[in-house]
Length: 224
Image 1 (tube, rainbow, N blue to C red):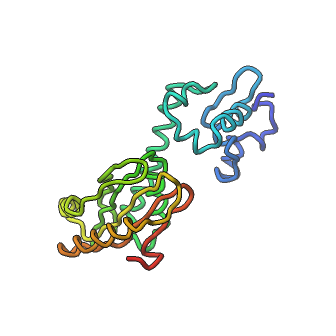
Image 2 (cartoon, rainbow, N blue to C red):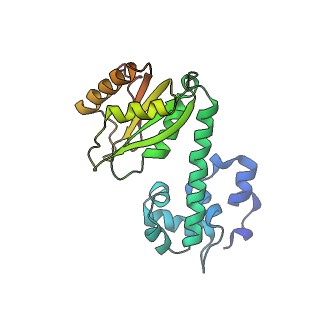
Image 3 (cartoon, rainbow, N blue to C red):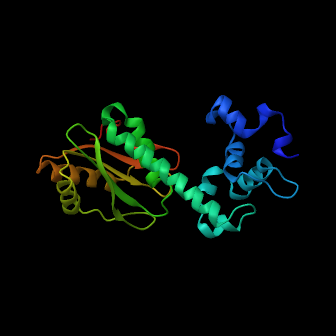
């Protein structure tokens, strides 16, 4: 049955407008994105098939262009549309950090870092450079490594912080394994970076580790 034949309060688009986006299932949200079904399938049916094929919404959203475009009902235009939507979401989070003071929006920081780093296939070490009010000046991916490590150079971190005239910094890296637990090396590099940055009067506020479903804060754990 076509969605246009459904009761109006059960149609995904009308449901979103009347009840809000958070009231929709993953399949209903995806159906709005793909817009149309195919022979014998409504957009919601097709969305359910796609979620089953990819193993969920997140694997679909992070699929390569090749894998995405091979799926029934998808293609280059939809892939471009999806990437634009994801990038708008990242920029929205970034703008929120630029307006808000860090200590009143740590949840936004975690959401932003998760969006930036969670789906990286190798380890990436990054930094949020902050002004004196602890608002974000810039986010940069500084070092990239293999699946289990990244070489981090304190001198380069200090240089980038000075170039942004940063007053404070938040460190971050992902664990491609999905487990947001720090290694001994993570503790050691955090201390080395903190000491190097102190020499130029830049405060290290936190170090976040981004895992699969969790973001760990050194500051919350009392480690920084």
